[in-house]
Image (cartoon, rainbow, N blue to C red; front, side):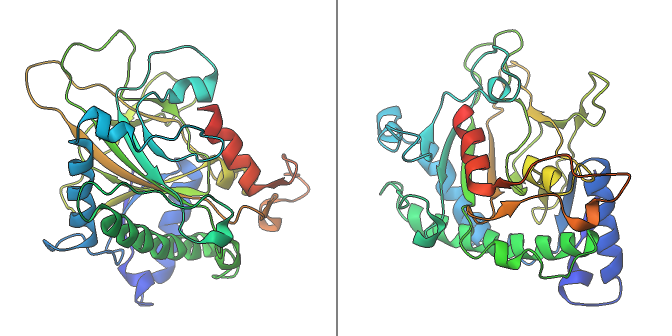
Length: 314
């Protein structure tokens, strides 16, 4: 999984085309890559990254009853909030497996034009809403930069995706993988094998455990590097981008494995930003990904309906 420095692209310097080439190659071959020098402040003690990381840990440290107050009673009406019973493998494959060993809290966009319900953020911990808002906004900006790179990689104008993001429905998800108090059941995972639904995902990973299945014909899994720098995000493509590119780019199966039960503290945090384009946007095979030898494989579909249907299945 390559680590790509975005600085030449963001500063429009020599090497900009090399960034596009590296991202394009990763999207074609594995659908995963890591980025650094991306413009998001992750280093200072008062950065948006530090604030959301601290607030996320504080939320998951609340009592069970306090966290459950942030749950949604009707996920069809409000598909966000606190969750602790997700089964991603069941959603992807339909096969029965154990519930994932994690808990999450998610929010959608604050823009009413997105068509999504009004955001609900609990009052505890202090500054939770402020940290969420600042981080969400920073991810919106980074997503647009990544989509500019991807547009060029697909032989499209640099700003081709911009008008598909004007009232997007991207979701921010905080994840906590608690330390094991007892051995996991056989086959149980922290996050079951799955692909993501939308265009792409921006992940801040807080430790080992994330794996990708690079070869569909094999049962082998590859560990995603943790990287030493705090300035690194993991990027992966979602099913919608694979569909959009007529399978030219790939959405790769991934999972989070259970750590050893050895008396050590293996709590793991991560933060995912799922980039979902405008809900009313039509997704059909890009003209640059279709030719006589590669006709369109999928029928056009509305983005919002596609993503919500996949989410509720989980």
